[in-house]
Image 1 (tube, helix red, strand yellow):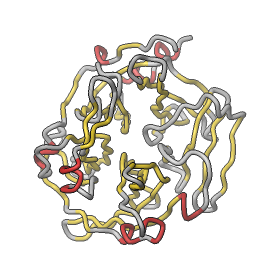
Image 2 (cartoon, rainbow, N blue to C red; image 1 turned 45 degrees about the vertical axis):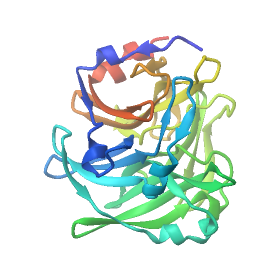
Image 3 (cartoon, one colour; image 1 turned 45 degrees about the horizontal axis):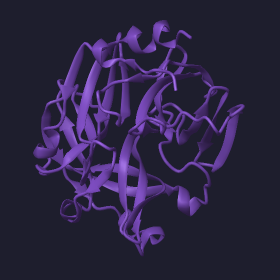
Image 4 (cartoon, helix red, strand yellow; image 1 turned 180 degrees about the vertical axis):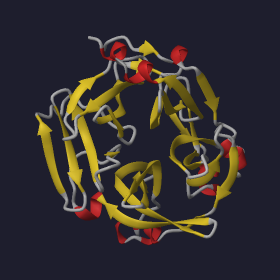
Length: 312
C-alpha cells in the first residue's frame, strides 16, 4: 500500500472533543464517530456515539461489559457552540425501532451515525448491530427520521436494509445531500455503486471494481460543480490494521472523477472520519482516533481539495 501522507501537521486548528462524553453524563466512556449539522444561530447540532470498549496497542477490541450494560443506547445528541464547546444535551426519546420485529429476539444498537437533511427533515443513517451467541454483528443500514419535540429528539424508524432485502455492503453508506434518499454504497477508481432507497433501485455508475472499494465515511458535500467525500481503506498487512483516508471527488452523476493520495490525520493506526464540512476557504474534518478521542480539524481548503493532494 502506498505510504500515507501525514496531514495532521497541515491542520491550522485541532479541537479535542473528548470532554463531551463527560458533559453527556458518561464520564468513564469514550465518545466519537460524530456527525454535525449547522444551526441557524451558528451553533452545531451533534450526534455523538458513546463507546463501551477500548482498543489496545495490538488493535484488539476489549469490551467493558459493565459499561455496556449501563449504556444500552449508545447514541446521544447535543448542541455545540460556534467554537465546538459543549452547550447542552438534547434528550433522546426511545424510538419504536427498538421493538422492530427484525431485532425482536436480539439486543440491537446503532453506531457511527451520519446526519443529513432531505426535504426539510433531518435523518440519521447508522450501522445497526445486534448481539448473537455473545458476539456483536453488523446487521445492516438503519435510517431514522429525527423529529424535534420541545427540547427532545424522537428517532423514528424509517428504512432498513434487512427488512428491504438489500444484499451486499451493509454499512458506511454515504448520503447525498441534494438528492433525497440517495446513497453511495461503494466506490472504486472506475465507478461507484449507489442506491435510491425511495425505490430500492441499486445501480452502478461507470465500472465498479468491487475488489478494490473505497468505503464510507462522510456524507457528500457539494464542491466545484460536483461532490467530495472522505473515504477509507484498511491496510490489513500492517502489524496493526491501519485505516488510511482518501478524498474522492464525484461528478453530478455520482461517478468518481478523481481520488486523492492516501493520508492520515492522527498518530494511531485506527482512525475514523465521519464528518466533512466546506465553509468558504476552510475545510472542517471530524475524525476519531482509536475510537476514543474525537477531533475537529480545520484546514485551508486547498490542503484537502486542491490539486497537490490529488497529484499522481
